[in-house]
Image (cartoon, rainbow, N blue to C red; front, side, top):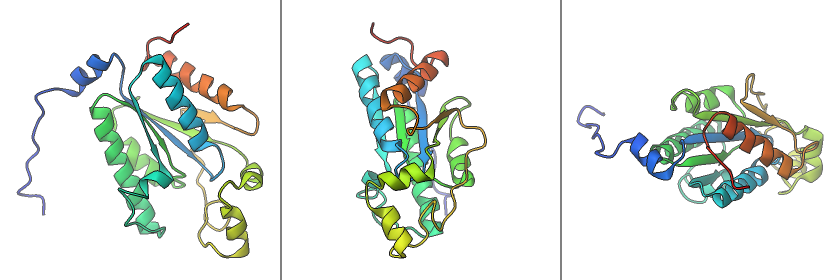
Length: 202
């Protein structure tokens, strides 16, 4: 099927695009239960990095399903395809020199590993939102846990579908014990320590 498709090499390299932006491209992959704080922390970090002058882009699970992945449902096959597409899009954005933030439940280790393999070593940063199920269910921002408990929704992660805890995430956060600002500070410090960002305003 792909024998007549030829890869075209760009005249402007990935490194050159990143150098123009004075940053190192990477993907922060926020994973965790619904209500764990993925989108909230990712949005806050996106705002902070923008204020610092870095070039970023945020991909959110719900938003992507309104456009790129609106043809996908929530079957196991569709969930895998959802993550595969996001991984490929994230790679394109990092090839453009951006710092990408992706907020997806992504409950399965194999799916997250699939995305990690798309990136050079050190550029995939798994951020595990280790907020307890009880806290997530108390928040229930979309009313999904209530529907899952009543049987209106099937195969809901954390209720009747498993969430596979990342064995070795680069960063672990818990919004039941840490404020959003504390989470953002931890992530900014991680990026500085790994020299993925070089400075921040005083």
